[in-house]
Length: 306
Figure 1 (cartoon, rainbow, N blue to C red):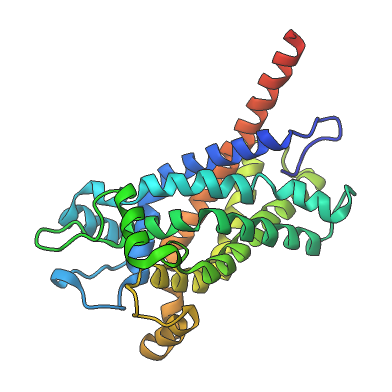
Figure 2 (figure 1 turned 90 degrees about the horizontal axis):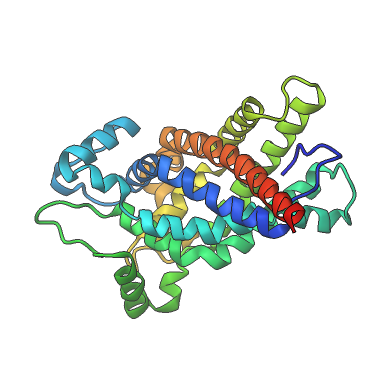
């Protein structure tokens, strides 16, 4: 990413992609309960509550889920979530610098527009690879583990098979358009904001290129990203979780939300979204920077030894 000293050797593409995938998996494991709470809050209101269960706030949702479904329910869909990050983050984050350099022809100090274009490009590319894993993750997070309530899926692989058998390939790539829109927004906002904040901190010598700098940059990126991407995220979640025929399209889903629940529906789950994105960004970017540096040190040691 940014912040490398001129004397530093830029890490190769493989190191960046592996570091991004590993860091994103670590961040997912730490913040997954917040993501599950966000999904439950986002889909609340589109159908009748099961067993008169209503969710109120992120911590109220987590508490209700633990009380009614057990603590394991907070990690529904974790396997698919980790599969998603291995496919998704390695592309959208790992390729960002290379795509940015491609658009600038290798020139230093790219413009904000170039950074945005690079972020949108890698975000859209990542969705095209990882969409089926996202569909399965969202559906697992949405289903309740209650006695007397039929579960749609029993395992990750069974979910892939069931969706393919009953909804075809279109089912596995359901919600691709809103997801591309959402992740193009998230990726360019997240990476560009992190890029710019970190550069500004280092340029004005407020902090050195270490953990506090990464923490502040990641927190700022998480907040800005949540504000911009939350409406698209809610539509994406509801559309991907919906049974066949409930919505004609993602646009129809958005229109239904607007007419039935009002504009505030687009910011349902905002607090857990921010808590999740903020904490996810902090864990991911800090882990990413440290893993990348550790891999580069190991690579250099191996090269010296040989």
